[in-house]
Image (cartoon, rainbow, N blue to C red; front, side, top):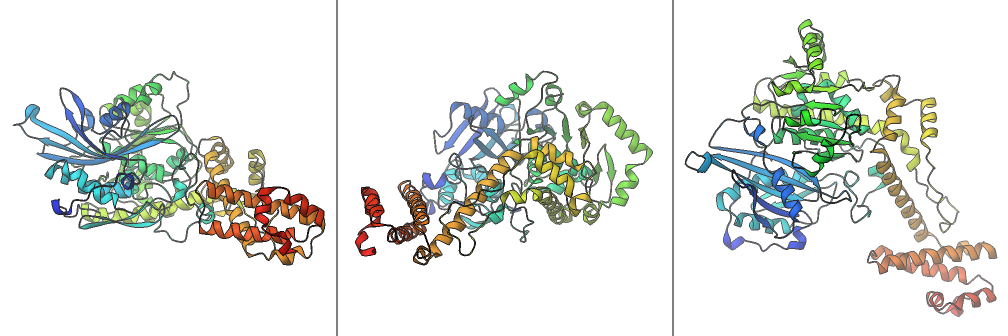
Length: 621
């Protein structure tokens, strides 16, 4: 949604929020006020008492632009901006996302010449496609009618159906409807201490999806082209850095620009599950800053992507190995919806270009002036941003993947018109996102055989244990991959030392969580296939060909599956399919029991629990 739909609070239509239903989407709504004497104050929280004292402090400091970024805009009477942040709630990697609608109102009649407030939506989920447009409704509405707007909107949100990751959802809010695509299950953290979302093997397979309108990762709506337009040739380097889990500091003039830049970077590695700790808007008040600031020279930074606006970070984290500067301190850089679009592209090192064709970029890239500027920029380092903001990347990392000239040549330059520029950004975002999705998918493709599931072959018993998935050895994988090659798609786009990228990926923070999760989904899919085969098998036909030993083994196997179904039902995880499976297994157990010798039957019936499953065995003989 590019504009806020008309929305009004009518008392007769107010809906009493159902808090349990509300919590499926929203943890809480907060109203924060910035007081020049007392600092950040939590004025209102709904539902109340959802935050600990530490969390209140965290939300307070993250809900306002810092003093540096506030100075970047003109002193108009009202100034709105939207951004988001993320912070860790505990030591179990549980995070809360905060989506902020910030309003700065300048009025000389007010004490200190103005006021600043933020409406914050806190959620456990990175549903930016939902909460950005929702902020465009609830933000202005709150400043029109006050606190009653919060409960009014909460009532509508509590009526929404449960979120279905990976699906297009229509979410009514007053007289408007938000039509949003939620990120897919494989891009979201595991729920309930390791219980998987409904993930299918096809969604996890290393194949390029046929439907490109369906998001394949987090923040699919982020303005990749608008934010990184001045650093297009560096996107492939940034993709590699995030892929292998290198620490990255992203600095921008405003919170909207830095949070959008972090979101774009995370979206680059879809469909890979990103295990790097990313902070769209990070401040010096975050508890994690003290730990980072205490690192000594030579200590390694943890895998993270930090979005900051405070130039103090350039000194405090001066040993951060990779620094990215994006955005522009233009007067309207905080506008809603947030993005960072410049009227002319800028290349690394401050080199500018009116067009986006590679030929034009290359000609300017090697001009003597721009070459000198690039050398000076590299020599001065990120601290040169203290005097003048420039779009640039500082890193000693030598990228293995080459910029794809065919992709860059397809990008459309919008010229000076903001309206045309916004529509062209949509086209360019689609081109870039499609390419990096294809790049990541092809990079992950060699791991495909380790997720290959097997269904029972015709004539075989579906009651024996399924074969295990192929075992994985990093050394063996690298050796085999080096011998057979990486494939045509990547070989054309990577240098000859491409095995080094795979080696660093295997050693980085993203590989093990992604690989283990993929294996769990593959094993789950294999169990499903064998369960389907058991439902279709006529056990009486199989028992007629069994010898005594095979019959005993089959009885034990079926009894094991029955016990699993019983445990599933007792835990509340049963369903109609589970009940049907249980009844089918009981009949299969009885069929096998009927062909066992009499003395074996009597021995088995001595167990009361087993006897209840077999019902009246005399009828089966």
